[in-house]
Image (cartoon, rainbow, N blue to C red; front, side):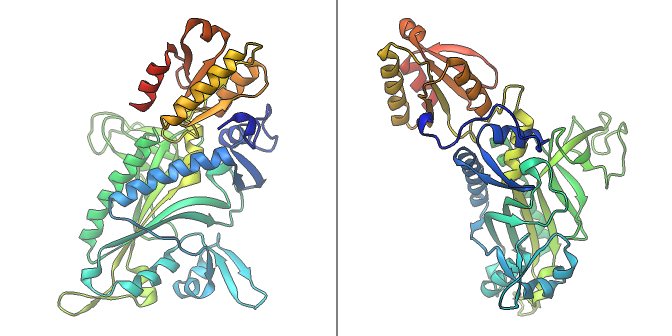
Amino acid sequence: MRQSQLFTKTRREAPSDEVSKNAQLLIRAGYVHKEMAGVYSYLPLGRRVLTKIENIIRAEMDKIGGQELRMATLHPSEPWKQTGAWDGVDVLFKIQSRTEKEYALGQSEEEIVTPIAQQYAHSYKDLPIALYQIGQKYRDELRAKSGIMRGREFGMKDMYSFHTTQDDFDRYYEIVKEAYFKIYKRCNLDAKATEASGGSFSEKISYEFMVLTDAGEDDILYCDKCDYCANVEVAKNAEGDACPKCGQTKLQKAKAVEAGNVFDLGQKYPKAFGFTYKAEDGSDHYPIVGCYGMGTTRLMGTIVEVFADAKGIVWPEEVAPFRVHLIEITSDNADVHTEAAELYRELTSAGVEVLWDDRDARAGEKFADSDLIGIPLRIVVSEKTLAAGKFECVERVSGKVEHKSLSELIGRLTS
């Protein structure tokens, strides 16, 4: 894409009412537009990043047998009243229609997915099943904060699985856990699975996936020698205690952001809706339900918080809006433009996503914008590179500079 045709432009200053790093940088770089506290529109660059994140999640959920659907976000009040959540969930947005009927904006989907599953899962032979969606959620947060990481409208992947036994749920949880770790790894994030209270969703222990960052709202204790990790609120240990799992080192305390979770919902929702299945002996049983959440917009904000530097955003390669930022240094020499256009054609023909800065702007402005936008590889075309016969390539994350020919570039970017 030509940057001269890009809908958005960068901003030199962050909005005065934004204190979180992710919101400041995403607004300045033209990824999002703030509508009000806790609500953002995702502009072309932001939509590209969000789509990349969603596709990573989608691929890993499909691999473990998840079946994607799209559930309603405008909910009738009846199922919420049936489970007691209409009056029990304080963040639920409630809407009064002109028809005098009451509706809710979906903040989770248990009240919707359970009756759907009930229509199709009648026998033990129909279970287990795992259904997921990637869509919008709405929560009436009293104090929306942390930019796109805690909002009133946000993107989320939520999956629900239905099982005949607790053992089968436990088996599937381990599969989902590994899939979650794969998602975080593909986003270049190091996540830890922690035990925490189930809150309003479940009376049982839940599991949260935490990414260490000072922007996080949770305090966790973790061991750097094994995978032990617990939320401070439910931990039986304290900072400096010996790790209760491996005993090899002392527990450390850190700030972290919750980047995913899983709840064992037990039989709560099937019982509320009278959802039973026929067991092999013909008897009726309630299925056991698992809920697996992952905020897509929160994950995007977390990536910004973890990797941004003093110059701007630094996107990991797999979620970046483009793979290459092609910088054409404006010159009276027409050969510079010709060379940039040819490189753009060659790279895009090879399947490489390129943002070509073909604007009539000073070199310093282009470099500053490139740092702010955060695309992994910058390739510079100038009179100097023409004379050298090689392109200047700069890695955003490390600042490492290399000079490569066209064939070397194509080989690197397509291998």
